[in-house]
Image (tube, rainbow, N blue to C red; front, top):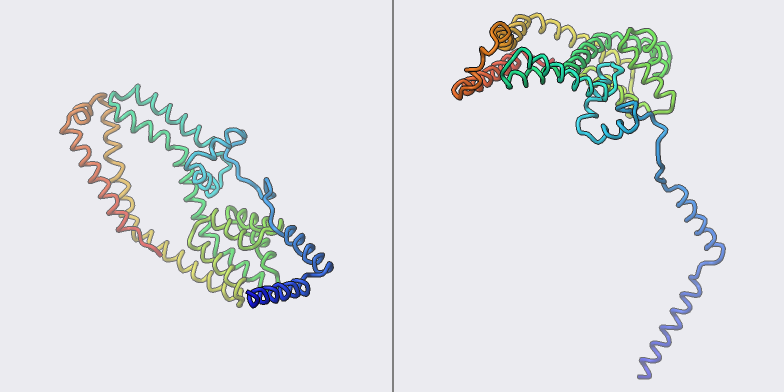
Length: 318
């Protein structure tokens, strides 16, 4: 027992000496407290709101909040941006509903089959979205045509000693629309403090094309790894010009097949609507009879297979 008590006493004395000599001084305590306060100040805080521009779906606040919860509205917003339109998402949705109602009303006056009425109503309701798709295709094709010229202008500006931001500004002034507006937006975003990477990624979201992806990738890689940017842009421009030339040749070689595809795909529906306009109720036997409906389903399946086959034959990627 005596040895145990002596051991415990020695242990307590040693522990007391350790605590006494390792205890921080008042100066150390103050320094640690200051470091803790600085770390707390540097910690990011959650703030309500942002200084970045927020895309709205409708000019009406409550409708904007409602549309933000619906699926597909953001994709529709991207389509409006890529088409270069100033429409609201709410305008497109209400326009589609109005076209659907008008199509249904006209179809009920001319047709008796509920299937035909439904088909005509759906086609009429898709008119605003179809218009945006056509505008988007034309705008992106125009950007593809102007992009090599814009890259050549950037290359000459850099060779003359201008900075990249100045070269982008020159493109926004000297290149025709619609590409000038896109580069103008990139320059304005950079001027307001947005990093180059984010500005270029926004540009790629508005113009989701392979040529624009080549340009943004080249600029970002040069910014991160270095290199001769003028040579990179010259090579990129040469590749894009060759792609434009090959795409033009492919369109010439596949023109007959594309026209045949349009005629074959639209002729059945055009004849169906024309016959029903001349003779209302002509389709009743085919759509109301069980055998007729089976034949319609088989015909639609063969029609879809034929369209996919033709698209596969003429879809040549460059």
